[in-house]
Length: 309
Image (spheres, rainbow, N blue to C red):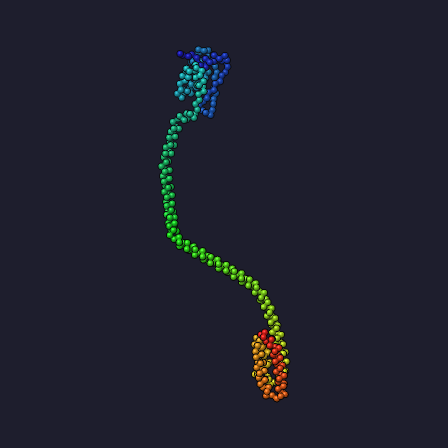
């Protein structure tokens, strides 16, 4: 069956408002842009040949050219235009640039090249991993041997180390005790110094008092010695080789020694005077007896003072 009209002209003849301008969308293969083509009805009556005038008003020329360029037979679509169900499916069909690129051999070739590149890198990664393992083994093996040797030496020489540590602990303990004793000694010395300070002050005071007493005693001894010489006759003084005035010495030490020896000398003097008094006359004997009595009284009074020295 040969058609003398297009499907669009047939539809326009059947429609009551066929003279109205109609629009049908046409979607290009580019996914980012959509173009709309205006389809205008033809002014020629039905039966106009396809090669006649009005060819510029045919809306499917651009679509036919695009389909023929892609290898699509547009004549089959014209034959199926008579059925309304198949007509809508032709208009809704959409092919994008992404689908074309997916089917292109360039992408497949690129994918094959990437896979080959990844496969070529596998030996390099394997070799690098093996090298790293060898480096780790070179580093860890000597360390492990050294640790093993150290542990063996510790097990063998553990007793020696323990004894040395115990000895060091004993020495430290002894040193601590010595330091503690030194601290106690330092505290004792400090406390003794604090106690000695007032004792030294008191001793200085007593020494000053002693000097005063010595001076006073010397003065009194001079006075008493001169007064005692008046009571002793010359005959008694001749008994001793030294004079009584020689007992008065300016130095305190010599005076102290002489005073300690005075009682003995006096007792000797008394015994010698008793022996020689028998040879004197009676008058002289009475005078001698009185002198001896006075000397005894003096010795008894001054014996207490001599004991302090």
